[in-house]
Image (cartoon, rainbow, N blue to C red; front, side, top):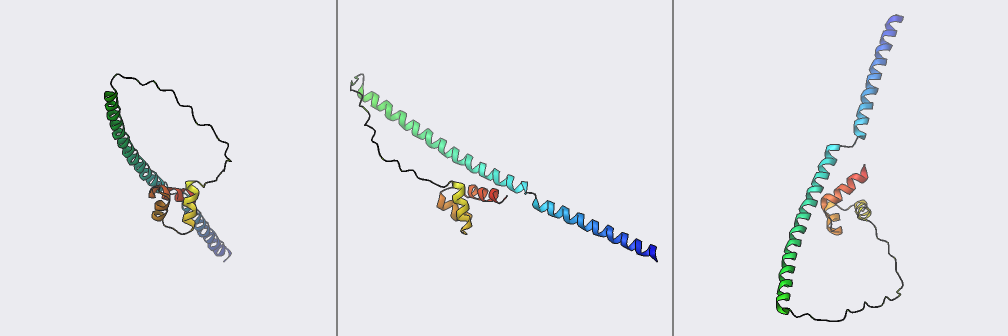
Length: 143
């Protein structure tokens, strides 16, 4: 009878240890950040930045072409005449009282609005930033 009780006790101990190990692995898996999700968020953020850079590049190129055209037209109008005018002196610097101001960073503003319960879309519209950027800030703050 004693050997039977020892065998049952041994089996119960094995089952309990197995359950503890399984729970440990589940808790450990929940605590690890989802790298695929963060990677996808970074990729969409980078894609948004690339698109914005392309738009800026196109805008700068069109501005340079306009600037070159206007400067060549001015040179043609002036011809070879050169105007000798004195270089104006810069205005004197006035001693105005400096008023220092403190402005919260974009991350702080995003987190503050998120705590107020605004959606990511509303936060992005209010702060004039991308939705992906706001989502990334919130996601990284949670980790």
